[in-house]
Length: 257
Ligand SMILES: O=P(O)(O)O[C@@H]1C[C@H](O)[C@@H](CO)O1
Image (tube, rainbow, N blue to C red):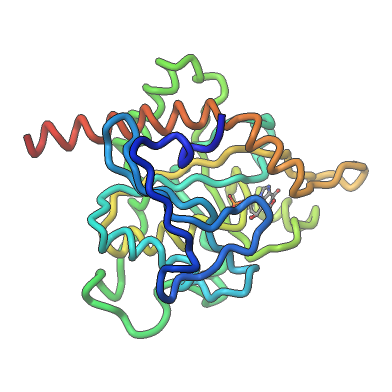
């Protein structure tokens, strides 16, 4: 049992508090450590706890760990999130491979790349139409099939709101019309920052609850349910990520033997 970070070989845990200028995790269930180690022989770094706009950090600071990873030599970013399922076909516990996102906070002029551009990381105006690596999406679907997960793995568009409140019915109806399939409060700022510095990116949502789009529903989304579903699916997610990381390593080795 345990999260992916807990099962790394040769694990070294670095609490966020001892990393200069690093933000601190404030969310229940987010431990606040960078964990270095090997996953099936592949060197990786995991974040045990991520940063969200609703914690009070500006978006650039929320995404700062991605730049730290780039400087450490990381080449691929696999971002995972808990999200509400807006697509009615999605069930709680399903996985949605992110094929695109809607940067709603960006629409309002809030972007992690705002301010002077640091050319050492990337260009002023990075493209975002191919943010999510198509080969990784294709291979993740193949892996899902191999693992017998094809019925629970879908593809769709993620959108991130600032939070911390969950959405109103009217907001969800609007997001559905805009083409969003899952709704959360993270990932987009990390993906934008990762693509800016040329990381290869894939992301997926664990659907932890169904978005409530009917006024006559008596259900309420809540963080406890989000964490419970995360724990319930922990083993499947670990296996899925492990297989994806193995695939990435094999292709990298075949390109640079
Ligand atoms: O995976 P993330 O951190 O996006 O998790 C979602 C958004 C909020 O942090 C939390 C709400 O329950 O879950």
